[in-house]
Length: 273
Image 1: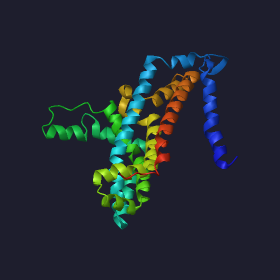
Image 2: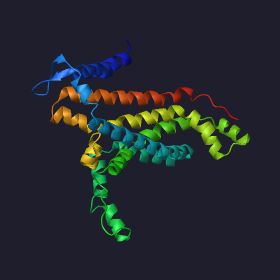
Image 3: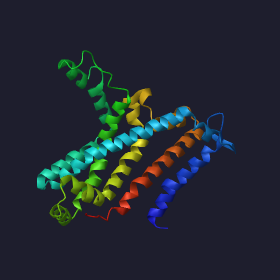
Image 4: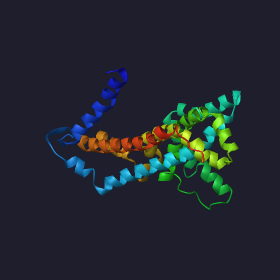
């Protein structure tokens, strides 16, 4: 086996197999996994309460991915059109948030969104609201934090794909009468499908397993599946149930990766009508 295959086995397949094994064991008195084998933890993971948390996590992750894609497409296209120092500074501005500590970014959002924060103070001074709005500890705050965190991971793959576009194809589409929207829909997006697939994967998967942002910005109302797994593993110390939830999270992530990367394999064929 090559180095990549060895890394895949020891860093992904082996830990996943251990989690899957824990998920079908009995919970001991101290929360440790013990024999005999049982499906109790897997059955418990199908409880409507936990399925609701998984559904919320999927929805927030999909919303985060969609917003990052909508923002990332024009940003990456603008970056492609820049030259020299302006492009370097713009790329630095895109990358800079990923260099900032995650706790710092989340506490910055707390300062902005709290009752006496910048946003509420501005809204009250402008007379748009009579009293501060509950902007913190809800799904909206979690969504803002996730988009802020993962937007660079969408912009950079899109920018790399846009850089590889052959200007002759865009010129040919223009000569054939395709307008701006038509060129974007029929030429740019299909040729950029690998970058779109990579960006969707790089945003959705970590957003689905996010722990810090939902914990700090969402509170109890913004709990996601990552927080639930953390609580089961570290607080309740129910390792079999936490493992069952982790397996469910991994399966959901793999499904999205397969769906996202599928169109990328077809991104090299473009038909101009």
